[in-house]
Image 1: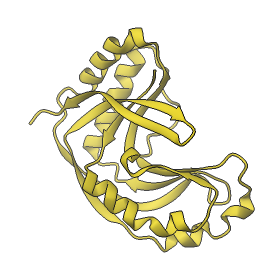
Image 2 (image 1 turned 120 degrees about the vertical axis):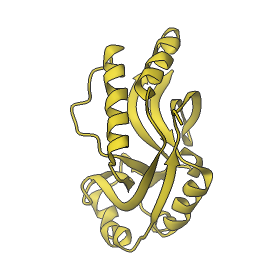
Image 3 (image 1 turned 45 degrees about the vertical axis):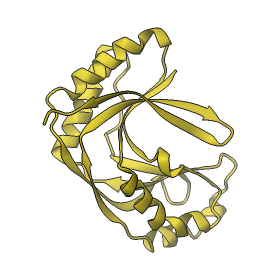
Image 4 (image 1 turned 180 degrees about the horizontal axis):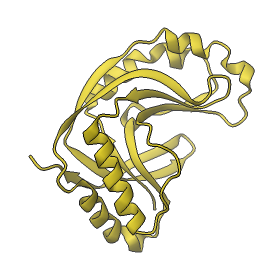
Length: 186
């Protein structure tokens, strides 16, 4: 199983992001766009995990979310990793509010206890909109910065749970399905 821990967004927020980024998708960049239903904020990518570890990881996700309270996630701003000249990932940003940062840190610690090495880079909360195709040349992205600068989106989502998600790779991209959900304390 290919697993990750994520915050899933309400349908209305995902649809609003999709609508706000139509011009980006229509610009013809060599990008595999994420389906509207696949927009999520990854807290921790785990990768391939044996099915026999499912219960252990579900328990760790529960411990990582223990004590978390619902919070508002602000979504705004567009960008790319690593650079606009050679983008690998195009994203919309999420404000790194303290409840989100603490939640991600607790999940990271629990995954480390399960034997997943700590990621060596800082947490940069974002929703992946698309990934550039492997054969894309820098010249294909000359207008990307201008298109991104022309986009506007400001939204909020109430975060009340996290999910352990499975990612299944296919010809049309990745398909995601929830394996387990942990609701926050209210």
